[in-house]
Length: 237
Ligand SMILES: *Cc1c(COP(=O)(O)O)cnc(C)c1O
Image (tube, rainbow, N blue to C red; front, side, top):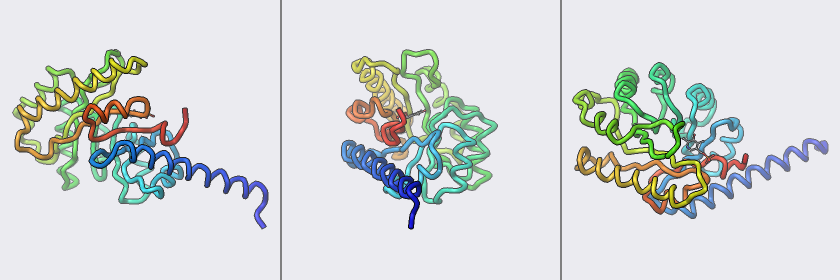
């Protein structure tokens, strides 16, 4: 016989799994084929991530290196881990063996470090350049001039263990939907310009990572290929 507490815990766990599953299915239904959902699992336990995994979710996003490393070490190996938070050069070595994509590249120095660690691990690491599109002072990212300087840097051609797959951006934290849409439009325009100028004929440059819980529908309308959604899946807000 199960105790009342065991019954209650089982009920709550089942409820959580159903909720996470329904949220993932709903978002995937909305965004359609060709756009990938990255479930942002920062602050969530490995157990919760496993529930989303059993609901079919294979792409997860983390913003802290240590947290990603400890989760990766105990969770299924076919999970694709996306680093979406600021990355310090001295921490690249901890994730280089497994990270699926680094969304937050913001300097040539960081690219050189990722390349070095990619080489050690005999793999090519997928990277996105993080662009500053918001009107807030606090967000990380490159402005236009900085991103063009990176792309023109002759060092870039020598980095054989990184692949620049596209751009990432975060819109302002505002209720002004027109502003958010314009920020995404600007990022898409920059993406198109960079693709034409620097990556014509390179099919790998194809990803536009933009949109979170509050604005992913706008991001999808404006051309996102990867969306990063956390709280809407795990309902912690
Ligand atoms: C936390 C985070 C997200 C997800 O935010 P939600 O509002 O929880 O969907 C997306 N991108 C980055 C870079 C984040 O840090």
